[in-house]
Image 1: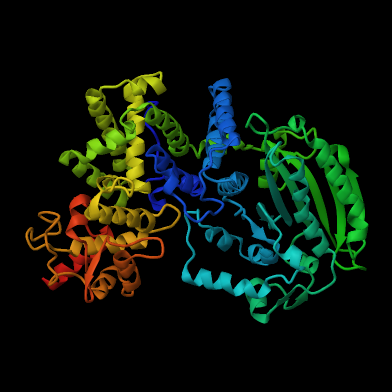
Image 2: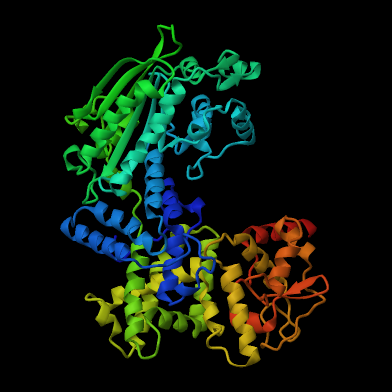
Length: 636
């Protein structure tokens, strides 16, 4: 692959992506959709509600993070992990303050997706543990990023297990673990709690990792009933009907050992952590010693064979199934690092525990580096890189625009390019990933060459030291990404509120705001609204042109053929979307509407709006086109 053959996944539907790509897209999708707004100097518009994730504050920490990622990549030119890690998460803080949570969720999912043979579960609440123990396969299939889907019968089976939700203490029921894995044949139940790096969250963060094992141990030693198994569930799962304490229930389903591992994934250089690289190891040692000291006072049953090995950061003991019972469940708690932690979770083995633990303890060990490399894509780092440079170009430009804006306008000024852009959108909507990926690079290169021939400035050379065509191709890619997942570039034909002069332009500026804040709102899933709008646009006919493209901005709507709300509902196989259509017409609390007009119960796109949209959104959604063709064939 050529260095500039970029891999962009955010423009594709999830159905076109593999599991690793879906996880990555889910992790960074909002940020990737917002970055092009910064390139086009529109980032101030993105959020009006002041929520945590809506602001776009570029802080010293995120700037430092980006610089650190670059330094790590330069120091390790043959290693993709530092650049991927840094690009994924330090950049994300440009648009969200909760980047530690973003990192955690990402690694939870990639670690689970890598180990599909045992059906590792993610973020499982302790109160819902029984469902996973009885139906690990169905719990796996219910995860939104797997390639598998529950059937109706399987959904019913999983739902029926709600009757054995554990009745735990209020503060313990919601305790969850980043990883849960049950080795049924060995009787080993593994919990994993990830900390992203040796310095994540500072000294105040690591103590929080002990809350979940503490909640679990407290519940294991209580004598109160937490679940009742019905006769129906006994027949289905061979668990005798009756009432159970937590430890009795775990013992009955075959759990003989519980391993709770706290894993520190990365070192300060963003490579897999090792035992000797943890500057906060003293904190971990103090925490596990404190955990052991508090066991006798916290619990309602006596524990047996308590063994603390603080030097190896591990604690072990036996929890009796009942006060006088010889039966017990072994409990193991330990801190682990990097790839040793990963393979300990995957294997259920304790051979890698302690300061002398190594990957030699595992057959065919896997690496965090390999997992992250499988998730490589250029969306985030490229979006940030272009936004950063194009903001500098905007500052240098006397015209008040940058290369991205000029390329977008160049597309809009050419019928050939506008048509090609519409065809590219159709490829994306129809799921032609391979074809669309090729066209993305080909179209971007053609745009770069055309723009490079026509430009009369040296702004590119001011922000990029390499071949200008390579940089401009990346800029063109970001223009096409902006059009596909942020805002369509046809909105540049509409005046902004600041630019509008006269009532006609002000009306069009309000229409642009409705498009931006309602139909293409970044923070929301507006696919349903856009499907509705496409149908209205397709079915709107104008008097002078006789088709759904007006002869001019003054062309009249042919109301005799305009669709009703029921017509749109029938096309999309939904209830009549009257409320949505009225919001497009009359506006909402945040918008003035105007992207549709109505007469009685019919709706249409006004000619002044359709003229500026040109070919955009003229075609019915692909699935609706198929249904219409099939209906026509049947009628014939």
